[in-house]
Length: 179
Image 1 (cartoon, rainbow, N blue to C red):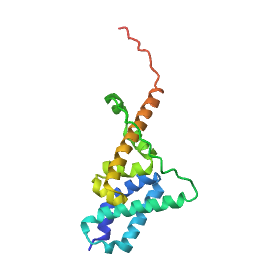
Image 2 (tube, rainbow, N blue to C red; image 1 turned 45 degrees about the vertical axis):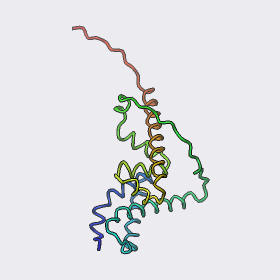
Image 3 (tube, helix red, strand yellow; image 1 turned 120 degrees about the vertical axis):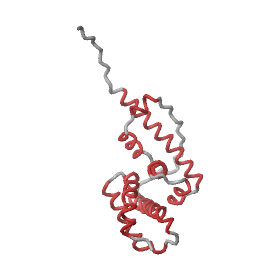
């Protein structure tokens, strides 16, 4: 039997961060995590393999996120068929050094959820492709494709951000001190 208090202690932070990366709002992220643990309290006893609890929790949170998004988007047209490919940008080492964590996080939050979720699970939560496929209920090939396309979108967004920031820099003339 899995200890519920220990479960919350072990997974709350990781689930909250994942929920925040999906929802982009702290209050929504907290609600998603709370709902995930509520669902665990109702149905967790049905889990047969304790080794799958992490995957079960992340999958439950992701499904709850999707259900809420479908509810919120019920009266909005969604163009989900847009599968355009983006050529990856080549960033120079100088440009990479100029990008800080907040810039990357902002760019990640701007990605479509279908790319943001697998990227977050892979790079920030260290899930395997197989675990991500289970969590998102998609085929393994789809996970690999979405991670690849998500990385390309992220590179482009970061490259555009660097170019935008470069235009804001004012070059100053250097004056030599006479001594």
